Length: 461
Image 1 (tube, rainbow, N blue to C red):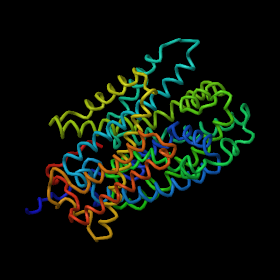
Image 2 (image 1 turned 180 degrees about the vertical axis):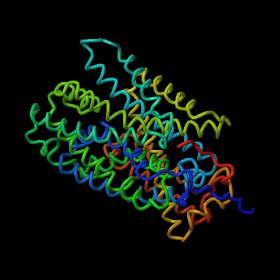
Image 3 (image 1 turned 135 degrees about the vertical axis):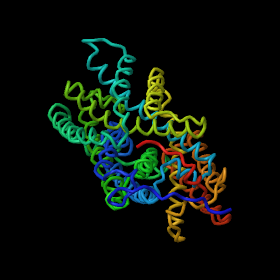
Image 4 (image 1 turned 45 degrees about the horizontal axis):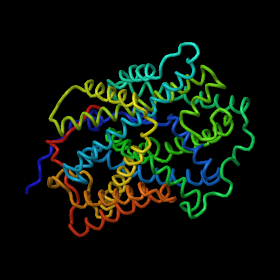
């Protein structure tokens, strides 16, 4: 079958594609992810399980792996202009791309619920004696103010909002550390948690368990692809190193992680025996008052702009692909916000972690196959820009079988619940998906099959 014709992209005066945005605007939009309270609490939780030293080793290994993987994926997205939906068509065919977009949209929605619930819980705790409003009222307020922030997408003013809030978040984090050091019990924070790591029967060394836990947030790699497609080719090196590379993850994981471990230990009389995301945020209100509320508000507003943007963007793609609906972006933002609010009204913390674990398995398989594809293309000398000329199929066998096999292994390990599941489940998923995809690609000679460019489904940045 002859190659599908491609259209010459419209370019700006500097020669870059017209749908790309300046590097600092893209960086500020993406770095909204730095400030999630999740990164504070998860490090504290891991340290309480495997100890400080093993947690730091696991964090350093995580930063290295995230930096390398996202360097490859971000570079590929910049080179091709592919987001998750287009990249998934290449890997899995039209059918698989629908599933990938659905998983991505659902995960972004759940994270929007999770992070928004932290703001609501903090506001409810701070105003309980003065206002006494139900948590559901605060859920509505949180969704109502967050929704308009993403109407314009990244290129209009979302980057400016997050650029303004970033120094406020940094200042608030420093203040939280100082106040916790003065008002809390900071002594011995580097020796908190398990002293001898985790025994081998529970999954191997503690640092490996820490690394396995952080594999649960590989969704950030799908986030990377959707953001990086907006990057200009001349900014490729900056984006793959700073915006989406190891610099970003050093700040996001290591700096936030160390602060989280310190706060969890220093404020342990408020946090309680079990570290939780909401517990850390509410504990800060006890020692910082309104300033803690402002810190949580700033941090969670920044992260939720990304969650709401990506949720609405992928809902828009699903609407076009599945239902042939072409509605304004604002409609999909409202649809996403409505879904987030309805999920908030349920007992979200009772099941959301299970849902995210399942989605985490699917995401890990997707990332493993995407990385394998990019690596094999580079090894075989295939130009990413030529991806558009490949033939169209409903299903790409290597991708679908590889993703299915890796996900099945991960879900079986997850649901059978052995002691080593947290450590080895994500690792086995990635290894299996990678191995099956590479083997079938070599046997079948298939290299992927996106839709032609003229049929591409795009969304508003």
